[in-house]
Image (cartoon, rainbow, N blue to C red; front, top):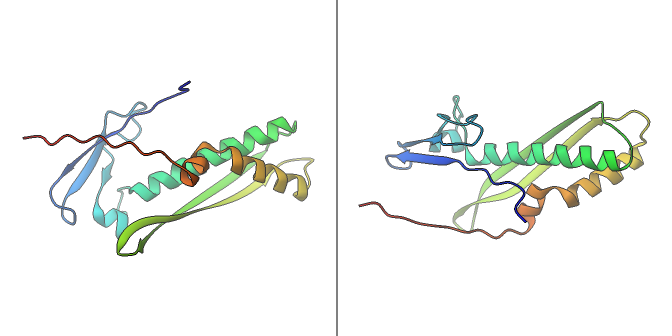
Amino acid sequence: MVIAQRNVTMSWTGGLEQGSGEFSETNSSVLDSQAVTWASRTEAPENRTSPEELLAAAHSACFGMSVAGALGKKKHEPERLMVTATVTLDEVDGALTITASEISVVGRVPGMSSEEFASVIEEAEKGCPVSRLFSSATITVESLLEE
């Protein structure tokens, strides 16, 4: 059963290094008109995004929700969760590869011990859909060449 689907269209113009892309047709419109370039991916963002930044945003948001859900199962409500994701783009065997997503969680949860929090984080890691995607994914690619 599909719970949700979200769409984003990216239109790219020009070559890799001098070209640029722009997002449109997003479900929320939050990313509409947001630019993406090779330089924003490998050098300085300069008010543009990159696939790695978008993955980091998705992973931190998903992981935070997973932690909040796991805390709720234990009848705890966080006062605050700060979740940082750092996604790494590296070269592996001559090909660009996203090699890691490092998550850092700082939480303020009244009445919870460090040991209990560590247990919740472990549960959240197993239940976060983006973490699950990174660990084992089915990737479907459709292609159309316009004339």
